[in-house]
Image (cartoon, rainbow, N blue to C red; front, side, top):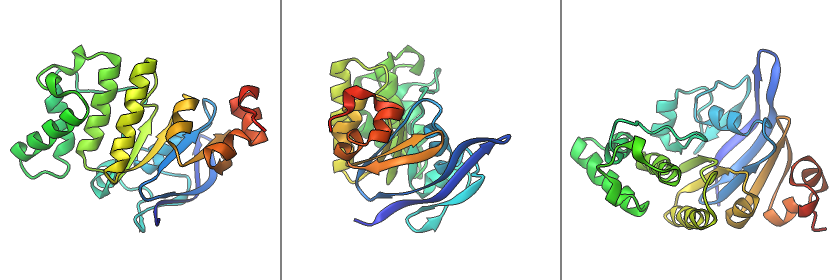
Length: 242
């Protein structure tokens, strides 16, 4: 596998407060790469820099060999990076179909082409029967699926998922895990932030751990749960399997 995303010494300060400090890693093509850590450890800040919402204070980000550091979000999206947000943000007065069509217009030249792509994705996400429903009427799990559908509609090569499984019931959680596995099988690389440990351990090939803005571990799920520093900083003794 070749590296799709490469991050070198990425750093972000907010008015002198260090949020992320010199973090380096690479995400390989077609893998599911997990990111975990305590609240405030810099996970969403990392996503915001990669997706262009924040300009880094230092370091670099390369996607498919192209330096994307500091580019605008729309440009980064067009290059092939899509994302969801921890707090779902549908266009409440638009229909589910219209919400997804907005994402599809990232690559589709006409409204009719965007609608065709949006309906295809809604069917894949189990939202086909909600196409004409307004976004504001959806339940929490439906909004999660809509958020994911909008990101998929941009036709990304790399998908950044920020706690897409939070708030789901056990059965909904299992369904979402299968959805993510199918997305990967279709060739999309996934970079996922998640607090539900058994879920991220089940689907990730590798996991990176942030603590106070620094990377303290990177490895397979089995390596992560046996890492004493990770257990102490985040997982707790119930994950200490050594």
